[in-house]
Length: 89
Image 1: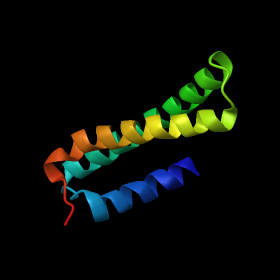
Image 2 (image 1 turned 30 degrees about the horizontal axis):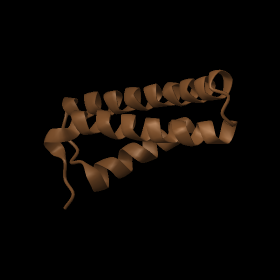
Image 3 (image 1 turned 60 degrees about the vertical axis):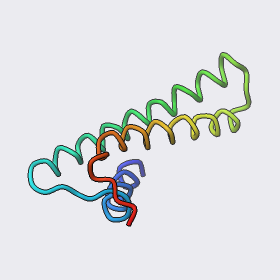
């Protein structure tokens, strides 16, 4: 499910948010996009683990905190990757 969501997210992002680049750069961007997603998956697990085991917060509440952290991580990192190709039109 993670792989499918990553592919769909890449396609939708290139269609609606950022302009896709051409050639070799497009493949490199796709690999970096995937790497950012994998880091986000790891961050999700780490944040949930920290907040449930060390802070003592409910698992569901920890998931919401992880969602916020990973949202800002993913968008911020991808914005840096594609900042020259940002397109809201």
